[in-house]
Length: 446
Ligand SMILES: Cc1cc2nc3c(=O)[nH]c(=O)nc-3n(C[C@H](O)[C@H](O)[C@H](O)COP(=O)(O)OP(=O)(O)OC[C@H]3O[C@@H](n4cnc5c(N)ncnc54)[C@H](O)[C@@H]3O)c2cc1C
Ligand SMILES: NC(=O)c1ccc[n+]([C@@H]2O[C@H](COP(=O)([O-])OP(=O)(O)OC[C@H]3O[C@@H](n4cnc5c(N)ncnc54)[C@H](O)[C@@H]3O)[C@@H](O)[C@H]2O)c1
Image (cartoon, rainbow, N blue to C red; front, side, top):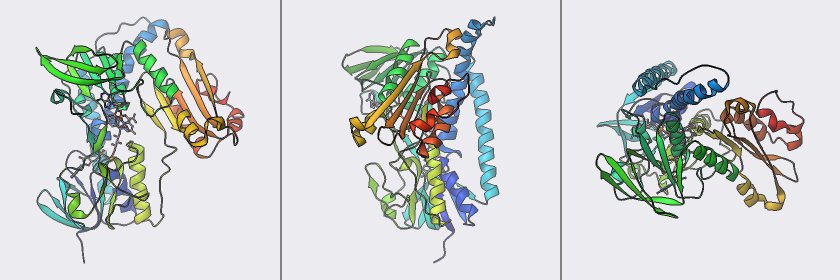
């Protein structure tokens, strides 16, 4: 049987683009289908526009800090529309570069919505296209809990399209998205109320990180209503009234409500049943080599139930292509993947949290060292935000199982540490490492 393509990829986000280029490098005839702009969530409504917003917001603090360092400066005003203009110019540049790199790799880009007709045939809008192998890389979309009035809330997608900044923003969900938007918009002068079901924000992070970031956000004037859930939302005279249930019941009136309670795979109208692809919970079921329940179909990135981060999506795309077309079977180690929360204070982690290590090895087998200190920069800036460095160590082997940081540039620092952790570095080896002075990171080698 001959097909239109050897490989058809559905979705040109981080995972799909990485897989397309790597497969093409093995001489495979590849087409990629995309229904929106190239680059998916990361480029258009995630990592990149979010980080640009963080950079914009940091000037507010930098100007205050500059005064403490002897500068005579005044804050001026922030022009949201001007920021959107320059941000979109940068996103257009990225789209062009993504398109150019697909052409250079010889990958055909097909615009439209894909839905399965059978295991080898996909309808793109109404046009049937066949392929020997198909990779599903359709990503995810925001969840909204079933709360009365939830239709008045927006999600991270619409946050990037706001025409003006609200005066008061309520955020439901204190995970990555809620914390990053809350922190950034606070620096831009927005009043923030964050509602989180647990006692602490950033579920899944080490407990010390959760506590220090939560305190830091509160010190910056963010109101956190914890152990609470949004119960009802009602429009009241051009604003929104939100009532919470939980440890305390509160009613607040705000301009905008962001719902940031997690994401689910984007599988609607893909007709996976026609292709014989099974689900596990709400995600595509895959094995460690990203194989689905149908022999010729694979899935990578946020549409599977693994770690929804861009570098993971990209690496799964590469590993799929290496395994299937490069004949180098490759799977990921999901235990040692670094991640960061781009809030102020910033947090970053690699490896096991203290509670996970105790769960696996038992409390007696684990030792933690924890240093909290005032970074040199804050001595003059006047900020009372302390930095936290924590290491989780396996007593018997002296191996470092996890490193957790809260400090300026935590995300940049954790990258180098990631390599050491992946190589099985011990506490003793770290102690014998000579650091750079004066930096915050040198504390890791004390
Ligand atoms: C606000 C926000 C901030 C984030 N910040 C970070 C960060 O700082 N660092 C980090 O590592 N991760 C971050 N993430 C997570 C990261 O963006 C995702 O993990 C990553 O984008 C997943 O890539 P993907 O290729 O699997 O999916 P996506 O990027 O979602 O790409 C899927 C693509 O498939 C297309 N598609 C879907 N269905 C069809 C169809 N039927 N036919 C044709 N095309 C289709 C979609 O239009 C989309 O372009 C963030 C996410 C959000 C929401
Ligand atoms: N810096 C980054 O790498 C980055 C940034 C943004 C997003 N992401 C990715 O996107 C994913 C989704 O982010 P997210 O923040 O939406 O999800 P999340 O799973 O990180 O956090 C959701 C939070 O909402 C809370 N919650 C759930 N239902 C609630 C309710 N009804 N009321 C109040 N709180 C409720 C949960 O307890 C949790 O703390 C993340 O898991 C992450 O992988 C990564």
